[in-house]
Length: 264
Image 1: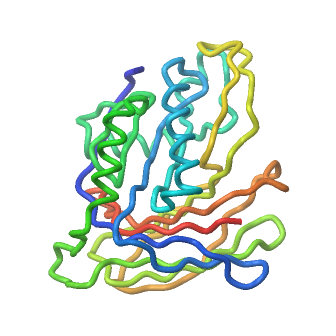
Image 2: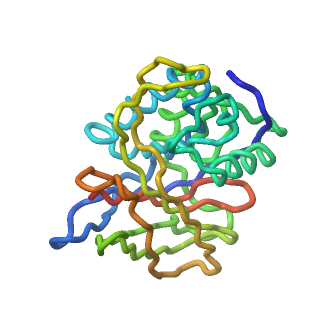
């Protein structure tokens, strides 16, 4: 575990939505069980403590494709380990900023890699499978999703989308939201196994699943809203399966209140 800074998180109130094909060239989401687990891992190819956590996230991604589609794994590669001699191709400064936001709110300024958060709750070491399995199991069993705002309806999110040239066009619809929420949209994909040429993992061949390739955040200022946006597709994504994971999050507590997936 590599300390650097820190984060925070709170309880989640989810209503999950799973994906299913719509007409040709597009995808749409439909209702799924009222509990889910959005798993955010902050990691780096430059950190020797991260490969076990990424292996765990890879397993969660396989579970999400088969028996437990209500798991939404995301690998955010941070850039603050690039100074060690290996620049992580998937690292983005905005991922590091997102992790620091968690740290400020949930983890009294403790930022490290690998660090994992489930449904915007308290962070833990991403390679700690026992803790991860327990927290994810609790999230998947949770059914008390009534918002504290007094609204008896559970938050909902539905997505539809299609690929147009070099981007994926996404239509979203949300309802029954508590105040102060944002919609996160993450384009994720697996990447080819890579042998690391320098730094702490020099000579190791690493495998990555559900790497965040593009990320957007939309402010939601009403209990019900709809709209559309676009995520640019990386050039190396051609011919490779990818997904858009959407999740609604309270901007102040970081609690995740709804989630959905589009698969292409």
